Length: 109
Length: 113
Image (tube, rainbow over all chains, first blue to last red; front, side):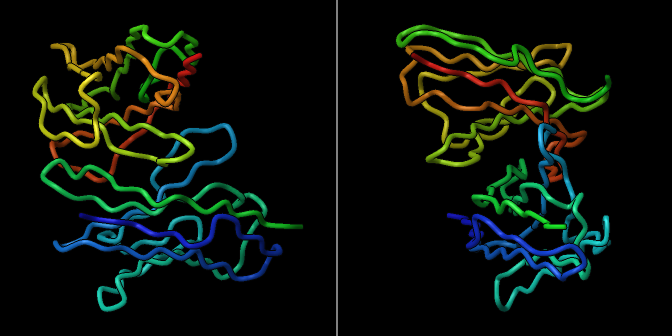
């Protein structure tokens, strides 16, 4: 069975500092990984997917199959990045998402 | 609003009762997914429909059922409710049968007393 682990429930960094949100996965097939974000009082929305290898709002994430990781990184955190971040793995023909438990990021002024 | 909509926003009911949660997908999206978010289990996939047909099942209890109608809206029916069913229920939609890129609704908060 697939599993997604986000080891940090809470993460605080100062504005302008680098930030890394960790995500590890366990899956026997070919993984499709995503990062979803939920800003305060807003709905869950897609931030990044590993297939597109793009940078959104300054965030990047690289799939490391050897370490089974998909960590989310940003070199200079901004206060508006404060949110709940979920790592998710898409599997099965329906690509249903298996979510990690989430990391609440707080960027301090 | 052309995004995913869910009604009602909040629902408070008693144990043993039955409720129906409704979801309208984004315009043009044929796939609807249902997820449950609870404090102890986190976000869990329940069930997926594509163009009216059930396509995938997750950890959905037998007391729960869903369907997708010809106009593509979906309903999640929860019966014989227990206290542990209290949770946020999210609906998500996508244009394809299997797409990890999903668009989420605001959720329905169910409280069972």
